[in-house]
Image 1: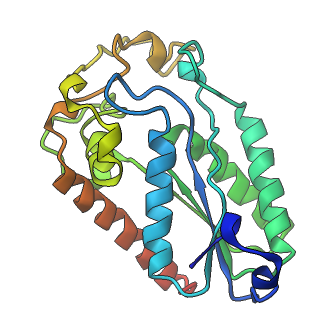
Image 2: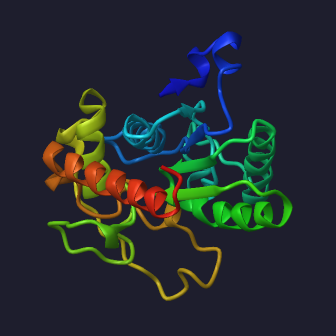
Length: 237
């Protein structure tokens, strides 16, 4: 396992066409009063490290910290880029990596709003170059055991993300401020420009108060094993 930012030219010249490149992808946006703005980045980075630790000849690229965060655009310090911009940026990165004849490029995404862009990137690249490109997104509540009662809006700064951060960066989590909020879901949500940013007072969608470090470790293990199982099935590892 090598980190691109720590690698010199002599080391990079030893990279063969069997190298697996990993790109952590996150966002810079609010995650309630109890979690840091970089939550999605920390989750993506940790998953990349765990997958890479069990993968030979892997190379971790610098985390891409900006994503499609339109719904929080009015919250101070949010940085959002257009979905099309994100698509083009990811395709440019993929084209650069492709020059080195890698075994695969794997994007590990900690911000669900980036997932649509990733889907179209994968499809566009498939028509353009013979790069093996995979993308994995977290969190998705239907993949994990939860103690709360998940709804369609149990998706942000809640039990899963808070548990993950307790396992990854506990010093950045303030559980005394972790309070549940289940915003109502108007009928116009999902069929208009009405966004999450206008529905929640705290920025939380779900119950972070029941998060634990142990749950976070379980979630990380589930996702790591899933990614590895896909890569094994596709004969990448």
